[in-house]
Length: 240
Image (cartoon, rainbow, N blue to C red; front, side, top):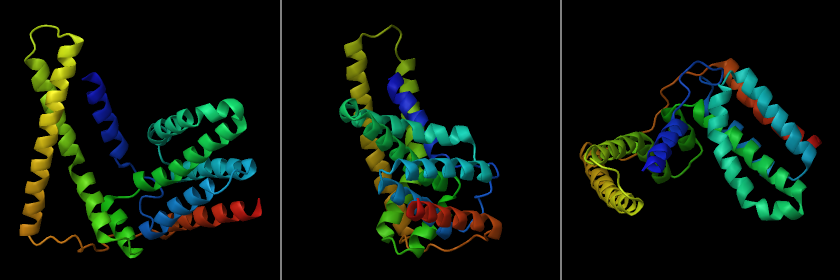
């Protein structure tokens, strides 16, 4: 049960946006989306160590310029990087350079995408996705998951606390395993039922998922940083 609780808390921290002021917070989300996707794509398209090194150094320069918390960045990117390194580990024993470059490619790609996600509000993300004609059903699914995931984790923590409060003695491993399975089964059923009620309530209020509007005003200097990321990334990939 400790693993489930720690996993839930980690996921909540991962999905939390940066609320302190940073220089990318008020950039145009359409440009910022491109500034996250383009460097990520060109990174996975090369195994040239010089290009990878250039993009890595360039990302840290952007991280410094944008004033995004280094801890927030690391806490979101390192777990996925470690997972990718474990996946490629058998190959790395025979070709360690390939393994290192593979892990770096994953880290840099995730870093640029994470920089976009933690410096952009959900309404701006939805607007930028709509602008690029991404199917509305995908935008709607992402919005619902983001909006209600914290509620689901809160319900899970309540079930964990209720379960622990009813135990007056130490349980064996098998008892904890069985009880945890029953608790998770009930939690998933409750989640599905809640999802159906929420969806029906949204439809009854006239929600169709298409009413996405641009509600923000964007700073030119912040948007220039996003353009700077796009231009320098492409320049480094083609020139180096």
